[in-house]
Length: 163
Image (cartoon, rainbow, N blue to C red; front, side, top):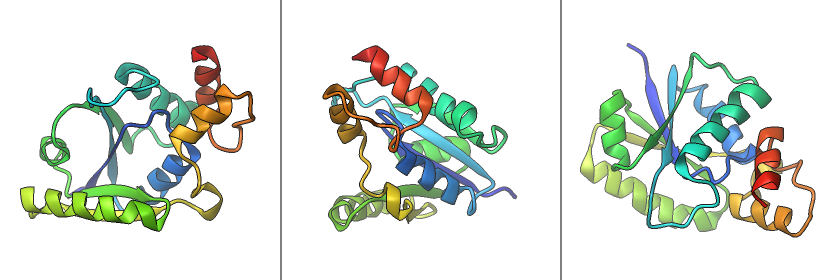
């Protein structure tokens, strides 16, 4: 039986930190569903269809990830419902700093209460990517800074085109 995991997020846009978490997740599961949140309560730089395409472009065109092991989908449900839909038993969450842990710990607890069959696994990106945040990439780009150390070519081009 294949082990399936979910990596949910807004990915607005996807960063090298996200890519690290994805790479590490693939060492644990046979198939990874990347759930791109359509959360309408937040204002996004890219809309959900753009973010889904950008995740695909980053992973498959720029970084050459295996298309057979990763499936990118938009979602607007509870993450545990996304898990049920794809028979996933693991939710992956990335941690950058201790400050992320409290929120992520509470979220993992809620998901566990909603479905006891689903485990949350916390992964950290490699040290050089731990400070990267989508919010900061957009700010740096908006102010004319170089974002090549934070995001792939497709993401850089998309941000420049949007600005």
